[in-house]
Length: 618
Image 1 (cartoon, rainbow, N blue to C red):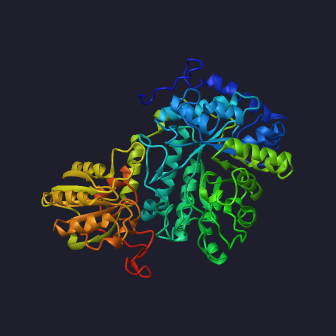
Image 2 (cartoon, rainbow, N blue to C red; image 1 turned 180 degrees about the vertical axis):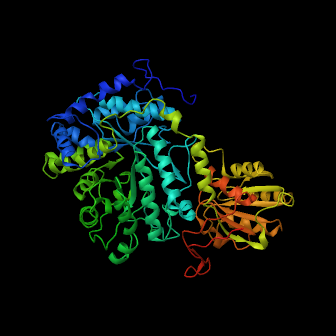
């Protein structure tokens, strides 16, 4: 589809974007309900007694089924609320029992919908905005219809559901390397403005986990770093940035997912921190987020015996969510689960028990259950059977409606006309992302002053290495992007993808190609002692051609690559970070990034090879 084209509504033949007149008509019922009891309703930060009276009046007119629906945030396939592609209709029927997003809202009255690129929700900016408006139109057109809180995981770096031409910023660890809270706040503000222009009003970012375990398979560069105070400062800055743009930020994953060697998507991690260590390490960024006025906090599917010896995941733990988060930390905002389809929350209980136990623990929003029908009916049955009270549901619904009120959704849920064109991927935003990225690249090794490369003596550059799946809307695989950026900076660069596990034949091909180059740039991706990537780099170094390694994910690779002439940490393989690394290699900018995590020796992990704060310049 042409960028900027409106998605057609097959039911009416008109565009999905409503006119301003239809907006006012569709929201009139909600506004009137909120204004009941006297006085005109004006959207304001939720939680005031005046506002709460109106929200409680609205809740009192909801049916039990509508209340249950408000608690759920669900995925749905398709680029359109009413006319998705047939394959997406089939996927919706198989997984959810509805054909479209509009049917999902009508059947279950869900309070939220989450967008994913793999669900084909995020093809282009205008399409996303039209999808958002279509969902709102479907929901507001129902009896007692409420606006939907649309969310996504737009962390930037290695996790971004909305790709180009939207502006993509360096991820958390890169920002941690840059060390500028102002940059973190600016990135959040700009990214938030673009999300709002797409109708996405809740972002599951920033990550507040303190990554103290180099073997962490699920957090890593999604964290700002290993120092809790530094992470706290960056988290608070991003919270303020996102929320100043009218998007709810979400700090995750409470009570802290930074010290685990198990991925909660596929297993059940156990965090062995003592209560004292948790308070001094994991809790620090969450306290900062709460002080910064965080709108929502996401739970982790992890066990922390020191906080709750019952052996339940934190998502289902009353001592952790109500006792600590609500009680000790004083948080009264929205608590959202991590995806209920993840193994970490399904290991101990069935899919019918998980949502009920989450609500009993203190959760407000139930995110993406594997079967919405099972989860929705389980909550309904628990209320009718007395295990959950309707008053308990009302507590969570009030928090959710407070947030929707604060965001202005109860006043006008639609994307303003022209917002996409004025806001998303503007030249000013793209320049801002490049300027911030330029301050994040970290130089750890520079033997004999190899960098910056000379256009005179190193003109012909071979770019090889890992090419993980490119982020949505990138200019191509990392080797291609790096080669193009270096060529644009005056070098003659060619790309040769060798992958994350190069075969012997691939290694031989790369070594042969290096024979005709003046320098080799190799992108590495989580190198281990037995990794074929390490063999590739060793063989390239043995050719005698200068080798520059660029870590395109975790910065720990340097411990496995002692022979390289230079080593840079880019912290991601997104275009903006690869372009920044290319500018450092070419000498267009001097590296100023500093390690936000320590790098241990490969032969003795108890010894630090490069400490937090290390970074060379020239």
